[in-house]
Length: 88
Image (cartoon, rainbow, N blue to C red; front, side, top):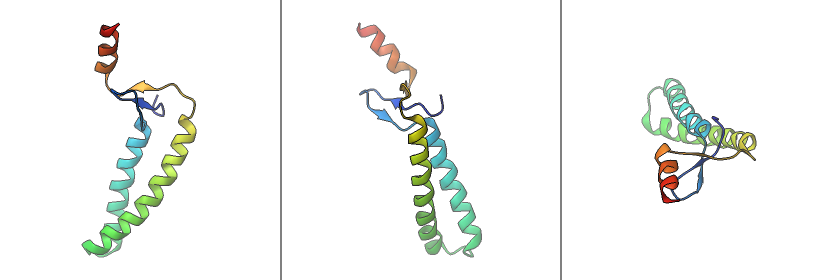
């Protein structure tokens, strides 16, 4: 369930919950780790966080896309299913 692509109100497949959780883990984890390593310099911190997070996010999203390939999408919000069932 965590790796299923999500459908929004337009039927577009959006990133899975695993991708969203990965984003939060990488951003907070990288930011905290780099902050402790660069002696609290905000400019260097932001640049290092950007570079490291970009690499980690790309790797994680590629793996997540391979795992979720071929799985049927689920809905982003339950109200999307409710609206579609009342139209029919």
